[in-house]
Each structure stands twice: as C-alpha cells, then as structure tokens.
Image (cartoon, rainbow, N blue to C red):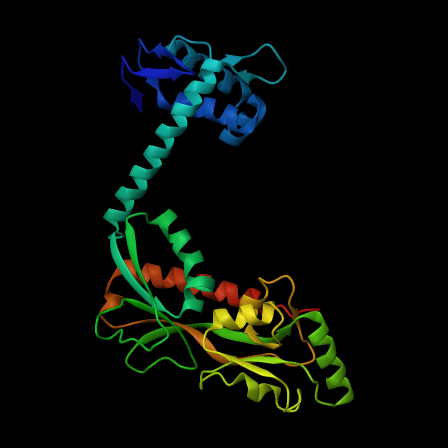
Length: 317
C-alpha cells in the first residue's frame, strides 16, 4: 500500500511533510519495534533478519524525511516523531482491519439483524459472551435481544434463535442440546456446615430455605428429609432474586452452578448431589436454518454455552 505525496503525518504537536511516497509495509516494522520493544524481537515476530528490520526502518525514515528511531543505545527507542507516526499508523491499521472485516461480512452475507430470545439467565450467563465474540468477527450483524421466560413462538417468525431451558426440544423446531444445566445446594458457610452435619447424622437440619415459586422447578422437593419441615421458607419468582437472597444469607437454596460461582461468599454443599432438571437448547425454525448468518450465530451460541456448561461440571472441594 502506497501513501501518496503530500500526506501530512502528526509529529506530537508539529507536522512532517511527506515529499515522497512511502510503503505501508515499511510501517509494519516501526509498529513491530514499538510493540515488541526491540529490533531483535521485532525481527523474530516478523520472521525476518535484524538487518531487514534496520533497512526497512531506514527506508521509512528516508521516505518521511524524519528520524523515527534512536539507535544510539542497545535497545532502539522511538523518537518523539516516531511515537507520533506510530499513533497515526495504528489508526490506519485499525481502519484497514475494520474495512476488511466489513467487506468480508457483507460478502459472506454476515450482515443484518438476528433476533434472539431467552430467559434472563440465558442472556446473562451464556448469550452475552458469545455476542461479544461474534461482534468482533462479524461487525455488520446487529441483534434484537428479547428476554422472556414464556415459550415464545419461534415458528411464527418473530424470532430467529431461542435459547431455552427444557428437557427436550419441541417437535416443530430444530435444536442442538448444549448440555445439562446443573443445580447444586448453596449457602453461607454456617448454613452448609449444619446441613453437612445433619446429613452425616441422618437428622434434618434446621436452616432457612430459599426456593423458586415456579411449578417446573420445585427445588423444595430436593430438600425433603434434609431440612426440617418447620424450616423458614422464602419463595421467589426470579432466579436473580433467588441468587441475591442466598448470597445475602436469607437461606440455602439450589442455584445453577455457573451462577453461584460468581459469588465468593457462597459454599456448595457437596453432601447433596447435584440436580439436572433440564438442558440448555439452542433452537431455530426451518426458515431460519436457511440463512448462513443465523446458522453462524446459532453455532457460536452453541459452542459458547457448551463450553461454559462443561466448566461448571467441576466439583467443588
């Protein structure tokens, strides 16, 4: 890439006139020197000799008509002018990469809007990490993110992808099972100690409990015979509230392992086996699967979710 005559390059407050064409490839050697701290390391990273680095830097300095590198010491240092050129070169480099990404995204059909729905847990724990990675690879894709616990109708065309917490995918949808969402009993250390002791002695523990109100996740059933029937029970309708209640010491309760590990003060009760009431599914409909863009996003979501679930399988000690 040639930078044309007459281009002005900032020099830390002053300016340098370029009276001749310079080669952008020479600029790569200046950037490498700045990033890796020495000509030897720059040569190694660029797979060239030290002499090549020196020659290309000299050619760049000649083209700009300015001294960019101080070669007086053992480790070469950028001059004030060199530092200014590096800053502008980094901006040019970033612009070129963005343009290349944009062109690639458009040529592959990786542009436009994708509509994703899930429960709040799905976005917070699984979808957002995947979206961040996708935006770096395909910046032209935009997203509608709809958080809803209801089984919204993907078949209607309102949504392209759904991340659902169910045992099996509905028959009219295409889905991939990313893995089981494991729940474990968590609480403050003093509560968990009481339960461990009660399990060992085979006597129910007298500890407060926090549980979900929803009929599809009856976590109190998992504590039958573990805590006393008279134990104080707080019921909540939202997983976020459940997490906060247990974290602040309102009682013990079953939480997804991937969620509970974010709280440093909670302890898993290893005396009680983990539960897997449902799996995490990435669902699409027949029409959505015809789009390379949607297939790419769904595949990224699946990979990210599967990886997070696998990490959550590590048993607490």
